[in-house]
Structure formats: C-alpha cells, structure tokens
Image 1: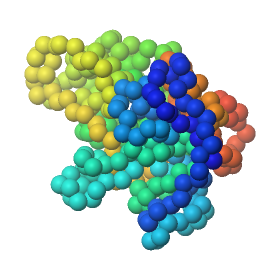
Image 2 (image 1 turned 120 degrees about the horizontal axis):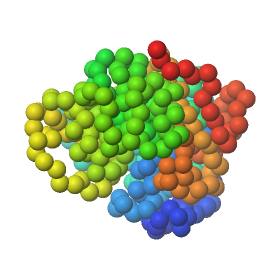
Image 3 (image 1 turned 45 degrees about the horizontal axis):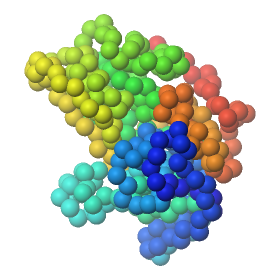
Image 4 (image 1 turned 120 degrees about the vertical axis):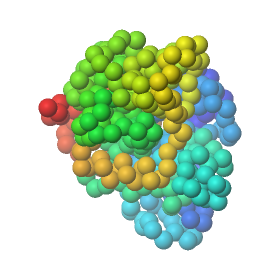
Length: 354
C-alpha cells in the first residue's frame, strides 16, 4: 500500500513526509482493517511532523481523522461487518482499567495510545483500528465532509463542553480553522452569540457566513463581555486577551495539544473567579454525541482536498493559514456527492442564521 511516512521530524518547508510502499496491515483480535478513503489534516499532525511533540514511534504514518470501509475482521469482532463505513479519531485505545477510565474520563488515561502517533494512521491506503474505537459514519455524510468531524469536530465539541457553554450565552472563538468552523455551527444551533477572533480575511468571511455576530483580530475587543471563550490557536500570547474578554465567573478553554509560551500577566485577569481549563483529547462519548448531532444541525464542513502524495504541500498550507476550512487527503474513490471540484470544495447555499 502507498503511505506517507515520517522518518525524522523536520520543518514542513523541507517536505519531511516520504511516499513509501508498505505491507497492508492485518487486523489482530478485536481489530478491523480499513480501506482508507479520506483523512483530515490537523495542527497536531504539524506538531508531530515538525518535532514539537516527542515521537514514541519512528517511522510513523501520521493522520487521525480517517474515514474508511471495513475490508477485513480480526478474531472476536462482533459489532462491525465488512463493508461498514467508519471513522477513526485521535484516540486509538485506552487501558479501560485505570481510575480515569473507570470514572468515564478515558481521554485522561495515562496508558492511552493515539492514532498517527503511537500507531500508524491515515496518511495511507489502509489502516487497522480496534473495533471498540471506530465510529460508524452517518449515512448521507460524504467521506470528505465526515473526515474533519473526527478530530476538528470532536475536539471543537468537547471544547464547548469544557468551557461549559450554555444555550444563549456569548461565546468567543480565538482562531478560526477546522475546529472553530465546526464549533461555531454547534454554538449557533444552541442559540449562542459568537464572536470570532482571527487574522485571515478568508477566515473572517467564513466566520461571518456561519453566523458570527462580530469578527475581528485576536487582540481586538468585541462589544460587551463574553460568557465563555475557546482558544483554538496554539498561541499562548492570546490567553491574556481571552481572559480579558470574558466576564467575571467566565471560562476560557484551551483546545490545543501544543501551546507556545504564555506571557506573564496580572492576577487581575484571573480574579473574579474566571477559570482557565485545558482540553485533553476526547472520549468516545464525545464522538458519539457529535456525530449524532451533526445531521440534526446539520453541520456543513468546508474542505479543501489534496491527493495523498501532496501531504507535505497540504500541511504547509495549513501552517501558513492558507486553508479555508479543513484540509483533507482524498486517498481513494469517494462516496457520491454533488458535482463539485474536489480540488476546492466550497459551501453551497449555506446562509447565516438569523
């Protein structure tokens, strides 16, 4: 099978991912083998490729937003069947026995293993996943559209939960990439008034199209205090601005696996019972809830598709903020969809909520 592998972390400008021909992985007990159709791109992939996260396995096939079709079953598989279409998120497997797992916080399992980090991921034509950690993909959600839901969507949804967003509140989103453009749709479905802080002109246009009440730069102040805020950008310097934007008793959730240096700031920004919380991975329940909610909203993902062999180009575009919405590798023939150019898929007919 073809796969893009990382042997040694290097800046994405040096094209560190190499095209390789690897053996097709075989499923073990409780596992299924997938024919990968699409895999979303994530900032975590960049942190892995560029060495900002220590690699537990080398070489590694990155990618943790896989959509694929089950082609083979390992011993003991009961829930899935050949031909089922499933999604694979960041969380590959947990121990199931530690205190965190027993209390339902499997995202905090110290023995967790992650897709595209501890085990080979979706920048390949085939992959293996434990049956218990694969999510059935709802009918009517094409492969390209579903891929970003499996990390960007799930993490965005969990970030809203961690920030304790309630229906009708005023919410701020700092950064407007793949996660934020899904999170805003959930928040608008809940009747929230959303302010978006982002630099890119295209991101600002998309935020407005998705119903943002206010759009500005990361260091600008919206009219009125926010109840909650989510920091999606991996920029520590924005945390003081997010804290300044929320009211007393408000919460800022940091939805980044990597955050650069947080500057020194006055205690006054925390005083007044403001809360800062981090988002660590996600649970299977988060995925089930988000995928169940997606067709009811309905969530529309804006994606830009790339061939598998252009993974370096796509990640460089992601780093430079050149993607509008979410980047996705189109790895195999995709599920039928309307006549659109797969090289640049745009929203069609989506109007801002009134």
